[in-house]
Image 1: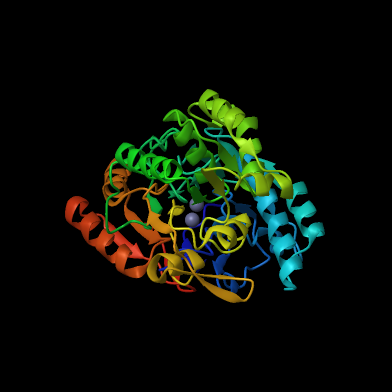
Image 2: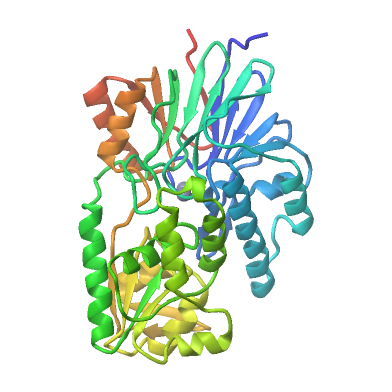
Length: 428
Ligand SMILES: [Zn+2]
Ligand SMILES: [Zn+2]
């Protein structure tokens, strides 16, 4: 029987960036993403997920999309679909979540056992392989161009089709192809709106400015500390430096190393696997405490986690060089309000081991976004030409700006989803 009613309910990821989780109910319930929101006061979770779901579909490994998935396995065993690299990267991040909880003495919502069960019930699915996931429902993934293995999800119910973009990027970056927008007919598009209000600066120019700053720091005898997200951004920054043929040592520390190894394992998911391989052959892998000391022995660059400075080796480096005016902290990603990275940018202060440090190094931020810009978002909508656009994964003011522009340029009805509020899809 084909369902005549369908709805989407956001359990999180509505009018905010973080804890993405949406239930698409078309007679059977499908969970699209199951993330958490990392805040300085701990994690925030999506609303309660009904255990009665047919399947969970994960767009990519970032914790704001995957972080709460093992929690579902405390009380249920849903089938999960994601690409092979997503599963592998998410597993690293889940274990890291447990490790951090162990260090901080907090209680996590799942244990190693739930991670094991999540893996057992996960079905790895590549791009453009359409499969039936229940009667009358097919699933197909398309490359989202956001991070390794990121996917846009197309669900076809016979009477209508639904595209969930997850996080995507419609122009190519150094390591990844651009998102594959040729997804066929879609009736409804649920789309991210992180940068709904603006465009990004030219990427090549941003890269050049970044490399210039790193060179300048090293030539002045300092250390260029480059906090970067483990998955994606770290690999890209290492690659950018070596593509610009830097002569000084570049160190790679923290979870970025594990993520790099996964990336190297999946060349078919990369644009230029060869470049990544070459740059990661040249980079110095920090494996021991001694290596970490050595990284500060001579001027050079250090690429390490955490991207928003919420823990990770970046803090132990900063503790050593915070008062060194020749060194610099070059921030390479989006800094959520309230994080240490945001505070460092705004106030020049970092909190480590119970005390505030006034940072004397130069602090700068570069825009290397892996998210679609406003223009990319609007152009994508034009290409898909759906009946309705549902905006998620973006702060409300940004989504509002985007909604207005989509309406003006395409006339397509656009809705900004609200957390815990059921949105009925008009199937007539
Ligand atoms: Zn993401
Ligand atoms: Zn995201």
